[in-house]
Amino acid sequence: MRLPSRIRRIFVAVAALLAILGPARAHVLSMSSGELRVEGDRAELEIRMPIYEVSHLEDPAKALLDSFEIHVESAPAVRESGSCEEDPQQGALVCRAVYKLPSVPEVLEIDCRLAEATVANHVHILRVVSGELAEQKVFDYATTRESVRLEPLTPLQEFLQTAAAGARRVLSGPAQLLFLLALAVAARSRRELVAIGVGFLAAQALAAVGLTLSDWDPPARFVESAGALTVAYLATEILLLPQAGARWLVAAGMGLFHGIYFGVFLRHSEMSAAAVLSGASAAEALLLTGLGLLALKLAKDFGETLFRRIAAGLLLAGGLGWFAVRLFG
Image (cartoon, rainbow, N blue to C red; front, side):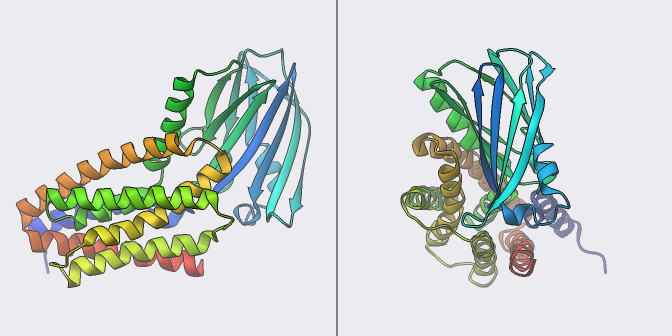
């Protein structure tokens, strides 16, 4: 039986977005931290990696240490030593290495490909220290090389750099984008889109700041499974309760789980919460606005009921699939 062309077009469009996001392929809470301390022409590196991120590797020490390269004026530094050991109390693998730099650097070039060695959505937060200078750099699958000028940043430069790091966490995270897509499909008007966006962003900020002030260390599998269920729940409401009100409350619930991700990021990085959340919220607001207006246009062109049923059905399948992978994987 051949589907009508407009149904096929809606199905293909939403399915393509879900395929691009691919939320089940990588952990949401996949983070590690490290410090690179530079003194003269020598540098000492320390990496703290959660054990569960390297359990699938045959030689974790080699994979992690080989993922780092340091250059000064394009000349590579020489790794003189390197070793790793487990820290059972922290549930982490701690790796340390010492490098001989080609010369005393003014600018340090750092290559970090931990996302290739662990999982595609892995984020590494590296603190570079030289004398009184301390600067944070964030690496993921899209950002593998950063340059550090060994001189202090102005307050404005530091704020903009930190805000950009928050925005990149939104743009590079498939699960984060899936949340926004689900919210966009749920909004039945521009006014509701604004209410949903405000509820989501406010709850996200509250959860992120709250986590940094608490001692709770959220289990990654629990947070990801719960986040997947919020997507599935919202999709179910769209399907079964198309006229339900107060969807901003559901959006706020999704914001709480998304905020946990940013809380973990802030805890690892020790970056300014105001700057990180400003950058993240600005990126999310822009994306949600674009996706929401697109969803409203598609609903108008193809029919409100038809569009939302197809989109919600695909989101439900995506949310349940993500939940199953995280719960049993």
